[in-house]
Structure formats: C-alpha cells, structure tokens
Amino acid sequence: MMKEIQQIIIAILILFTTMVSAQEPSLTLKGKVYDKENKMGIGKASVHLIDFKGIVLKTATTDSQGAYDIQIKTSSDKFKVEAEAENFNQAEVLIDSSKKNVEINFGLNREKSVVGAMSFPMIYFDFDSSYLTTHAKKELKGVIEYMNHNPNVRLRLNAHTDSRGTSKYNNWLSGRRADRVRSWLIEEGKIDANRIEEHHFGKTQLSNHCSDGVKCSADQHRENRRCSIEIIN
Image (cartoon, rainbow, N blue to C red):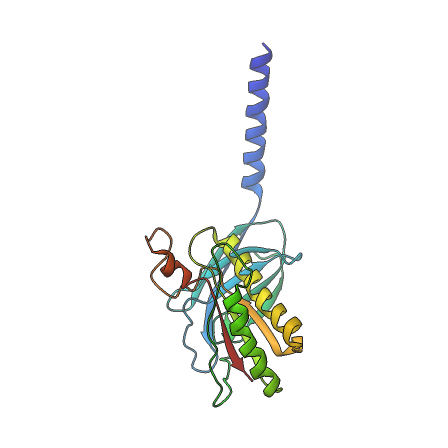
C-alpha cells in the first residue's frame, strides 16, 4: 500500500513539473551581426544572452551570413545581449521588454591596427587550464617591453579553447585565459589596465578542423588553446 502511495506522489510531482515547464514562456531572439562599414554579415561572431546577474544564459554563433537565433525558456524580461567578433569592437544592447520575440541587429566597427605595429606571438595554454606556462610568460615579457616603449599603444586579447567540453564551460575557460594574460601584464609590467581589453570566444572560433567529434592529435588541439594579442588604437 505504501509503495503504491509513493508511486502516485511521484507521478503527481512529474505531472506538476511538466505543467510548470510548459507554462514557462519562451524568448526567441534573432538578428544579424554585420560589418558597420560595408554592411556585410560577419560569420562566426558570438552573441551572448546575459541575465541581470551577469550570467551568460546562452551563446549563439552566427552563420556565414551573420545571422543568429537564440531560443530559451525564461520568465524574466530583463537581459543584456552582447555581440563580438575577432577584429571588431564589441557591442551590447539592453532588453527590458515583455515581448517574447525580439529582433536585434548589431553593426560592429572594425578595429584599426596601429600603422607599422609589430605582431606578437600567440600565447598557448595546457589542456583544461588557464595558467600561464613558463614559455608564455617569457613571450609576454616581450609584450611588456614593447608597451613600455610605446605608452600610447592599447592591446586587445582574444582567448579561445579547443573543442572538447561543453560550450558553457569553454566560454568560461576562455574568459579565465584572457583574464590571466591581462592580469599578468598589468601586475608584472605595471601596465595601465585601461590599455588592455579582453575578449573570449570559447570554442566558437577554432583555428583548424578539430571540431566536436573530429579525431585530432594533441598538437592539433593545442593550436586552438590560444590567446592572440593585437595592437589597436
């Protein structure tokens, strides 16, 4: 008898959970990310849907035409949407609306490189790590030296991961990698924090063919665990 009562209670709980989930409204967010100068769509750009606590709820990657589509169940009506792409300035929009079908298009400005600027070596990371290797620190000392001799130069950091692991985790990990590089430059080189901006892309911008499910060597995966350093003005 007791077992039957327990089964009935479990069935009621499952039914209640299903009903609540079905009643929870959905948000559909669509749009396009494009180059503001030539109006062409930007492929492989990242669009982040962020709640009021600063937590990334979902990330979408644009197709070759720059289009993106995010769908998520939520009862909130306040969000921030960020769009970013390598070699472009980031853009963001605040949503404060009860509408559940929202279209947001982002026109991004292309970043301008300093004329005649040197190029910096890529910074690579160990698997599942954001800590700087001895070799990475050696490379970054050269960056510090250059910045100290060029006090008007600003940097942009672009951090990435390989394809292994979830998108959510890799987005967090790439953010940690960008933050590690930026913090090291600031602390070790006494560089003004306002001279360094950081961006992270998770596994959305792989440098080779090693996407999810593709068999690759350790060296090939390593190519994707990187942080590029660009000079901007």
